[in-house]
Length: 155
Image (cartoon, rainbow, N blue to C red; front, side, top):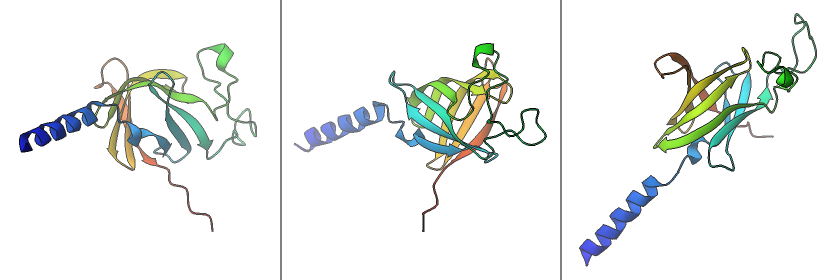
């Protein structure tokens, strides 16, 4: 009888690990430079995506040609998208749960230069996310760590 219970427990443990458990990725993340917050959500198609939900400086600075106006995706290679506001812009898309602590096969859009990169997200801990963007293979690229945004309690 013990071996039956043991076998059932082992099967339950294996099935639990084989399911898509990327819940640790979900939520709001603060970028390395602390200028932007990105919310990662699960899309209807089962992939993971991230949108900019906060900017430290939502308007262009005084020395910019568009001073005081809301930041927009003006470097997008598609002229039709250059008026999209940065707030709400999807910069992570199509990420698939790989296993354990990795989302891969996604795309990262950088509104600072209007370029798209292949991407991989690795959850280093509950509060730290490594975001890697690359061209072609993962060796050719760059990465940065984001921290989970935790709102300060209101007093």
